[in-house]
Amino acid sequence: MSAFLARVSPRAPLVVAAGVALVVAWPRLPAAKPASAPPAAFAAERALVHIRAWAVTPRPSGSPAHAAVVDAAEAELERLGFVVAREETRGLTNLVASAPEAPPDGGVWLVAHSDTVAVSPGAADDGLGLGVAMEAARALAVDGVPRDLHVLLTDGEEEGLLGAESHAAGVAGRGALQEPRVVLNVEARGTEGPAYMFQLAGPSAALLDVWQASGCTAQATSLARAVYDQLPNDTDFTVFRRAGWWGYDFALIGGAARYHSPEDTPEHLDPRSVQQVGDCVTGLARGWLGRGVSSDAVDAARVYFQVPGGTVVVPPALVQTFGLAALLALPRPRGWAASVGLGAWLVAPFVAGMGGFGLYRLILALGLDSWERGTIEMAAPAPWYVAAAALGMAVAAGLAWLGGLLEARLRGREDPPVGWGWHAATIALAAVAACAVPTAGYVLVPGAWVSVFLARGVPRLAVVPALLAGLVVTPVLCAIYPALTTGMLPILTVVPVLLLGWLLGPVAPARP
Image 1 (cartoon, helix red, strand yellow):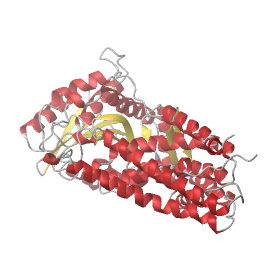
Image 2 (cartoon, one colour):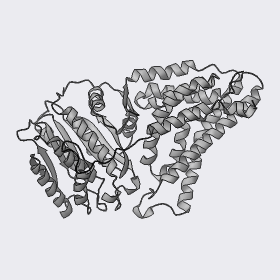
Image 3 (spheres, one colour):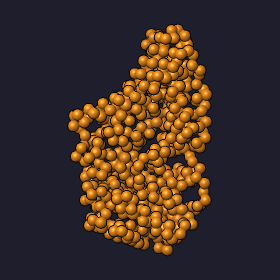
């Protein structure tokens, strides 16, 4: 076997495993159900009837268009059998719909906001939430409105969560709730793609038990909550979470260039995305209706992430154990040449980031941005995101190869396994992240075990962790790239270095 094939062949199984994981774990959307679907089922086409009727023109708080939508929503909820009350404060109008003689505490709350920004008809933000709330309420009330089902449509969300703040303050003013409320909030930062449940509030164990039983296929990861907590973004759910209520926060992020723009129209809202959000909200509501909610439940943190077929939930200690075990399994470096790969790994993010910055400057120079909206998002950013990812992978792979080549030449014929430094950096990053923030660090741990076997010169044993790493990383990549704007291209080029370092690092020739 030639020296070239000796170096390429050990990598082939890893590339195949990662490719299989990419195909299998790529998020998929359900088909949109027609208006003729069974009455108890959520049908995207029935929800879209409301969205198409209400997302015709911008409806900022206090406008006639907003008042008309509030009136229409009130009439629809009353037609379904709810008793609807208006909460009017500071020029805002919240709608609170409940079953006749509903208990004041606890219950399941379908939540959306009825207002939009001044320039957008808001088919997704938050026509999606309005349509899902109407259709889910209808499906859940086929045999009469359940006593613990409520619908809350807030006003003033775009002005600073004002309606949610007003409602929560009113509830607090009546005294502490005997049972927490379970909130199902629907938002949008885009118009298409898979739905993301990006934050939980309340005891993770109980919330995830119902989640797994609901059959919801939305993307869910504890990483999203860890990242979201560091961002300045807010939804109405933030208010309810601070109030001690439980629940789930959903959003679409694909097609983010249409967010808060005139292009956020019903024509751009993917019916399959509506179906996925509606299925999740309806399934979770059914799981919580009639279920006792203990106000003294312990919030034991859980690590959770989406894989084909469902959501995996594990205790943080398991992630920490495997992260530390990978660090302990790393072989000792042999000679100073082993540190060459470490230098290559440290340089890779910097070079990739500079390449991403150059790509961004190229976009500006070519006039391909959307400055008329005062943003740096693009109407069709996907090709540039792919370019950013490819650039980051090329930089990482190239520097890893150069580091491995230099290390091999410095060593001569000593110790065939190369790339200790590169893989040591990948493993150390995973171990630190797993111990410090296991709810986010879990995404690095399977890749760390790939690096363990590569550093030990047994690449065949790395195939299984490579498959697992691909299954875990793929949904994260699918979420990161659409969620960031074109101005974040430097960050997007660094992501492959950090999340796919195990795939791009040096591979030792097979032992004879």
